Image 1 (cartoon, rainbow, N blue to C red):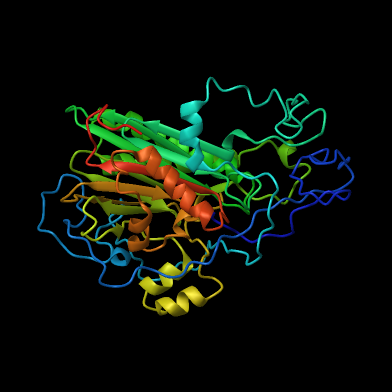
Image 2 (tube, rainbow, N blue to C red):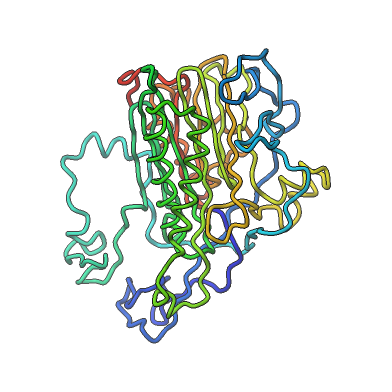
Length: 440
């Protein structure tokens, strides 16, 4: 999860020491009156990254091409040195690191939260055997007797109930995504959008957008949700009109940025009790897959990976982090080891939000020469499979045929690794199969 500086530790109930959230009037565990105790909830940083993919780990498809250009001979490149330009025509690697507008991680280790997120690997069995789902707000999951009020607390025992965003699964045609709160955070601040459509010539297209809320910003969960919905809606509207996928991705990121900016336009009364809150913020990454083209776009440190169906061929990471360490290495000012050993390594240098210094959407297009799958994810996953080779090892061999199952397995891998962060994964087969050809 993307991070900014944190000010204070998560508030706990003065009666039973259980964690409480901002705005809680009573403790979810013991019912203690919290009105006289100032709550100061926060989230915590992710695990430290172990480094970037090793040089020499290339791919054997043609280099990225701008819209409308003809095909070129295959080029070999390393994932950390991707060819191509962003949608503004600039090289993907900046010549100098950006000095302003950096959000820093906090090195504190988070505490465990007692209400664990569901295991996504059990979701398939539960879906197959369970009948129509009962309304989760009717009966308390803790005491199994009390009625749950409109605020999400049991009227009998006061226990807080699981929220809808704690675990989400969706599939749309050939693309599927899973998002999970993880095992350490008290809420899920990730969000995603998936969809499929057709281009004007009838060619199928699938898309996925994944957003990661900046934890130390105000309302990061609202920011990621607004951004993912705006970007997804923009893509689903632009692609059938004939907009080139790379241009559509650029427009989607701009629309997402505007949606997040609008969250900061609050009435003055909204900040009466919290005058020092900052603007909502999140990162964004997305992918569009058609029959012969793969387009990616991003702002921040969420990533897209390419995993070929032939596991003998090299995988690749298709995005470059907007982070302090990545910029220092790209500028040649520090070695990779030096940059990632620095306490500023995981500070993000690009995000969506009213306090962002400048919006610079990155987009790139590729023409893979073989089938495979595209993995779109937040750092909640890639912290546990950072290099392209590591990601390739954990992606199921049948992920193209069963994308929802593949996304569940990847989320399960992150939970098995510790689940220190919210984790969101989308899986898209390449090339995009005809509608109805893929089943989870």
